[in-house]
Image 1: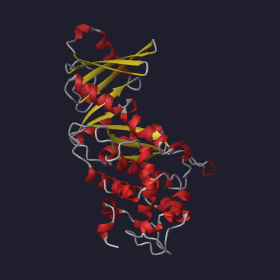
Image 2 (image 1 turned 135 degrees about the vertical axis):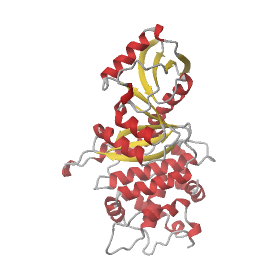
Image 3 (image 1 turned 90 degrees about the horizontal axis):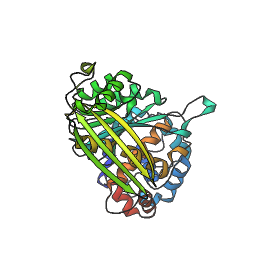
Image 4 (image 1 turned 60 degrees about the vertical axis):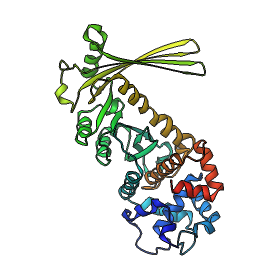
Length: 369
């Protein structure tokens, strides 16, 4: 085997410390690559990962050493349960920074998702919650961080932001992330933000809402978008303004330069509903820019979380032991990044995963994407 035969992702694996010290029969690099290939190709537990490896053993021998063949499912499970997630996240971040394009002007959406079946009642262990950073325009996961529950997103988000290279990007977060510390961290990292404001910041929310209710407080910069399909029409009206010296406590929010209001009207088969949302931002008032980033924020739900649930069946995954749920989640994010970067096959993620399982050449094309 020659190192040049290895997938490019392997060159970043040197930062991962092998947690095993005795009776090591299988190379760490071999285990990681087999697991990644298996998950790309449809495996969602360690039994399937090991079975996949055995079925592809002759192919893997073309670029892996495999001194003692394919590891058992217990070996995969033990290794990923022991593997330090900090090392694995460092490897993931180094790899993503290597393949990422410039983030200047791009939307980085930050949001959390609970892995519902990762709880272990016998060990009094609750389901883990992963906070992820998603680049909407590039369809790539930049990074992730585990929290014990959704309420801990507030402390996890600054830590995640500081671990990423976000300079020049526009960070979008829902209302839970409307915290002074978070805006300070974003500005320190030389990025901008658009953050939703709700009742968890009651004074800020009420002041902004009252301000936009009076048209005399304008002029506002405005932009309208209309989408429709399958009997649904959604109209969004965006209003922004930078004249906010009147805003109580403005100086407490790092870099705050403008506020925004979004009015959404949904007409679904003649049934009309209305919704109004408010935002703070470090950007100067420009309604069309706000519209693009606010819309892009929801791609973390539609393109990442939905994909994890539907294509990868993440909520059904019963991997639970120690660090294994977090590490398996990182492997899924790696798989999604690689699958979305591969552009030669025009098809769904599920179609690409099935073709990868059938076609070795196509799987290698994904690994080299």
